[in-house]
Structure formats: structure tokens, C-alpha cells
Amino acid sequence: MDETQFKERRSGKDRRDRPTSPFTIQSLKGSRRHYRRKEDARKHFFVDLYSPLSVAVLIFTLVLSITDAFLTLMLVGENIQELNPVMAFFLKQGPFQFIMAKWFLTVFGLTTLLIFKNYYLWQGRVKAAVLLFIFPFLYLVLVSYEILIAVKG
Picture (tube, rainbow, N blue to C red):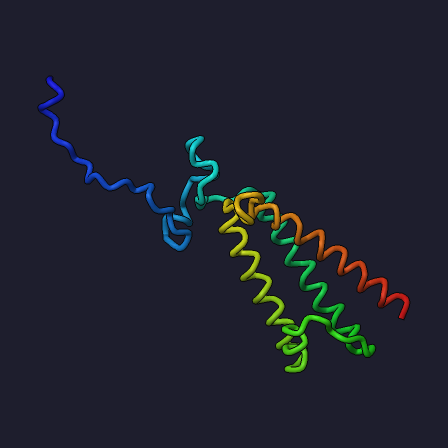
């Protein structure tokens, strides 16, 4: 068969012009863990499946955040002031509102970071996934400091 006998079925529009949205049903049953082409390594792309390490780090950070919330409530009861103005606002609303706001903001932020983990920040110098591993370290330092204050107080 001659090549001129085949009819072109492609529309001419490249589906790779736009990244796949993470908010689709396909993202729940996807199979993309990494970029597929070498030239895609520096482009923004979403993945369908996340590594167990990324998910574990996210959950660990969330646990540290909630630990921070309960330690903050305990320390505020001992007349220590909340320095974060946003969380101080929710603290004035009550302990339940404070913990729920802390939970929601942390879950939203970490989930967004996980979804956009393959994006490069600061003119392409740092991959967003690096932040996913920096936040638990920062929370660990904060929680350790709060425990130290609680023990001394």
C-alpha cells in the first residue's frame, strides 16, 4: 500500500500544548509518575500518581502541623502569644476554629504543593518539590521549640 492512500486522522492540534488538569476523573486512575520526554524535564507538567515518599512526607508534615496547633493552644493557656497574625485571628475565634483553620490551611497548602511539585520556582532555580521536604523540617524545629518552652514553663 502506498503512503498517499492513508487519510490523515489527526486534527493537527497537539494535545501536549496544555498540561493535563489534575482535577479530572482520569487523574484518579492515571499512570503518569514522571515526564515522558527528555525535553519535558524543564516544562510544567502534572503527574497522576505520587511517590509513596511524597505522600509520607505530606502526612508527616500534616501531623507536625496539628501537633503545633495543640502545643500552641497549650502555650497560649500559659500566656504565650501567637506570632502568626492569621492564626492569632482564628485563635481569638476559639480553639475549635483555630484547629480547623490550621488543618484546612495546611491541607490546602500541602495538597497544592504536591500537585504543583514539578513546577520550577524563582526563575527555574528550584523545583517546588524541594519545599515539600523543607516544610516538615521547619515544623520539626518549631514543634521541638514549643516542647522546650512547655517543659521549661
